[in-house]
Amino acid sequence: MALVGAEEFNENLRRIRETVGESLARAGRGPDDVRIMAVTKGFPREAAETAAAAGLDLLGENRVQEAEAKFGTVPPPAELHLIGHLQTNKARKAAALVACVQSIDKYETAAALDRHAAALGKRMPVLLELNTSGEESKSGYGEPAALLADLDRIRALPSLAVAGLMTVGPLAGGERAARAAFVRLKTVFEEIRSRSGLPDFRELSMGMSQDYAMAVEEGATLVRIGTALFGERSYSR
Ligand SMILES: *Cc1c(COP(=O)(O)O)cnc(C)c1O
Image (cartoon, rainbow, N blue to C red; front, side, top):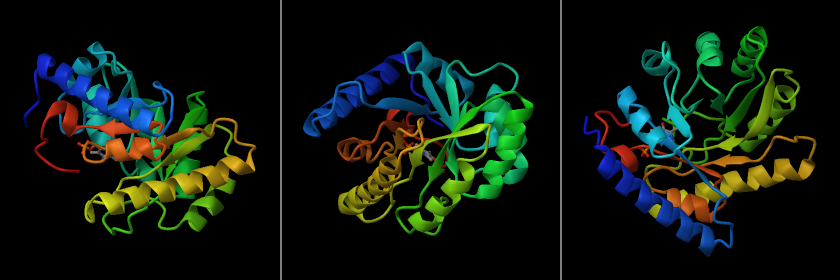
C-alpha cells in the first residue's frame, strides 16, 4: 500500500482539478459542475482525513465491512458513499454508515435499505448502477430496461430518494469503449429526467482515475477517484 503524503496528495488533487476544469470547458459546462469523490478503499482512515483536510467533501468505500472498520466508531470526516455492490444482508449496516448508496442494482436490496433507513428516521439518496460495459465481473443492472422497470418500484419507497445513476467504465477497449459506456449511461439518465416527477434526480456518477476526463466531457456530475489521488492500492477492486 502506497498512501501518499499530504503534499503529494495536494499536488495530485491540483492536477485532477485542472484536468476536470479543462474537460468542463471543452464540454461548455460551468466550472463547478463536477464533484470529486476521494475513494479511500484499500487505504487507512488517514487517507480520508487527508482528503477532507484538502477540502474534498465526498468519500467513497466499496465494501460495507471495510467502511465499518474504518468509520464505524468515529464517523467519517466527510460525506461517505457506498460505491460497491451491496448485499441485502448488509443493508442495515449500510443504512447506518453511509449517506448514500450509489450501487443499487436490485429492488430487494433497495427495499431492505428503505426499511432500515426508515427505522433510523433517515431519507437516503440512492443511485442506480448500470453495467454499461457488458463485462461480467461488473455489478449493476445488465440492461437499461431492467433498471427502468425497477426504478418505477424503487421510487415508491418512502425512505429512499432516487438521485441519479452510476456506472463503472470498461477495463478493456481503451478510450473508445469507455466513452461509449459513458454516453450510454448519459442517454438513460436523460431519458429518466425527461419523464420528470423525480425532483432529486440529478447525479451522474461516472469516471475513475483512468477515465474521469472523458466522463466529465460526457456529462459526469461526480467522479470517483482513488489511485490518482492516493497512489496504488494493494488490491484493484
Ligand atoms: C475503486 C473504485 C473507484 C476508484 O478507482 P480508481 O481507479 O482507484 O480511481 C471508483 N469507483 C468504484 C465503484 C470503485 O470500486
